[in-house]
Image: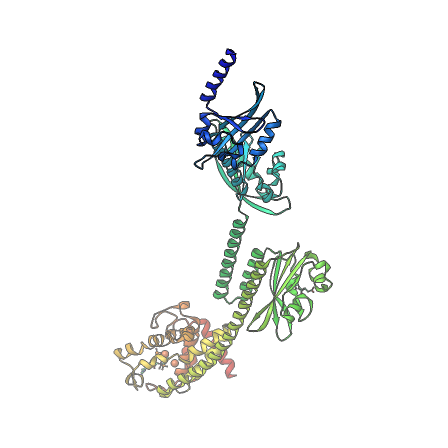
Length: 623
Ligand code: C2E
Ligand code: SIN
Ligand code: SIN
Ligand code: FE
Ligand code: FE
């Protein structure tokens, strides 16, 4: 009995001192028989609030859904354990407990002992860990990036890859990890070598690196990735693994490429503009355009056909990229063939597969050796009129996007402008000719007025002009040069406008001072005429007609071939005509005397070749 008492006492002491909460229940009724001080402190309820109550009648357990079930379970089971049960303390705090109960027989009575341990701290710590793990896992798996871990020494063998790899490339994380070659197989063939070399180098150097490259997804999509990888060391500084992220940068890359292309297109358009604006050579402008057509539109060949509005045919304008020159003989009637239809209907014609197209008779004869597959033709229209057709040909199928078609249209616009410009220039040439005719009449009138001042020389300018042009033809001058000769001769003595009447009309030889003024007249002519743009080339005669072959003439004292040919020609004609007219200072010379004078002055005053030609010509004129 004492033994029992002793053990009861020992038990009591343990019960009182235990650092776990303990409840003793009557197994029959479920009533709480005893509660230890630790539990009272843990839950904040008084001893009275526990005693003679059922478990679920105690505030702390009221909200525990399972407590009634737990009690029933307790009655049938000898042992029960809840790893974590949430209890509410009297002051409303939630604590997490481990609940363990056992059934004992005490003096033949069944007693349930519940041990209740506060595990809140441990639970919170664990939970925090789980929570943060979960948080990071969620983060990793929802990042728009692929996170991966590769082994050191073989950076292509993947230990972990986040599931987004499937979104990115269509392979599951499991497939990715299972096949160490999958990564390198997925890299775009054009980038593979560069990427593998860089990876290999990094594996040796342990340097972190970042690179951009293309991959081919399982379904064939092209994906641009940015791959950044860094070596992670353990606490001792030894390499543990490579940690990498792979970012989908396809969108940015495509945008960049597009911007780059647009820039190239703009640059091309600018280059074409400059060529068109700076020259009136249609072939050159069209060739420049075709160079850009081939480079920017990435087609194999292109040509420009120009509409001949009279014949209603398209004729060759320029070509680039053809194997033969047959296209240069092209003559397409409006409405015939692709080009003819483009021009007639003023509409883009696109043939994506020439083999399947029936209407290609011209193409088969003219272009059969070119093995073209695709064709695009676009009309060149300015001011509402079709001026020609721009055609592009490709030896493989073309699948143009909107951007391509936009640029094709822009280049066609440029070609139209080039055609328009040249046509404008040609019509300007025409109006230049009209202008020239107006000039000619003005100059003739002017020349007549000049002769009237030099009274006795009436008709002189007309005569010398006619004869100078006639003589100049013997020297094979072009029509354009002859018109300048004509104007120069008509105006040869215009400088005499600067010579006062008392000198010009003096019926006697000139004094030395008077000669100084008289010899100014070629210079006056130069000053008068040089500002007139259309007369600039006609200046040689007024300025140089008093130069002499032996260098003794004026105003510059030029000799031999330094004197412009037209002035050398003119001088002979001028002296001949002066001598056969009366002058205030002397009467006209005889025909014979003049011819002798001219012959004698050959090689001194005159160019011997001009003298010969002149004498020959005037002899024929006479006979
Ligand atoms: P112009 O009367 O039209 O004569 C043009 C050129 O024909 C002269 O250039 C000269 O090379 C030649 N020529 C004209 N008359 C004679 C002549 O009687 N003998 C010879 N050997 N050659 C003659 P040049 O000499 O430089 O004279 C330029 C212009 O000066 C002449 O144009 C005329 O307007 C004027 N001039 C020349 N000599 C006299 C003169 O004695 N009295 C006056 N009043 N004017 C003169
Ligand atoms: C032709 O078919 O007339 C020559 C090729 C072309 O249209 O450019
Ligand atoms: C063309 O005009 O470009 C080719 C004509 C054709 O073969 O139909
Ligand atoms: Fe003169
Ligand atoms: Fe003269």
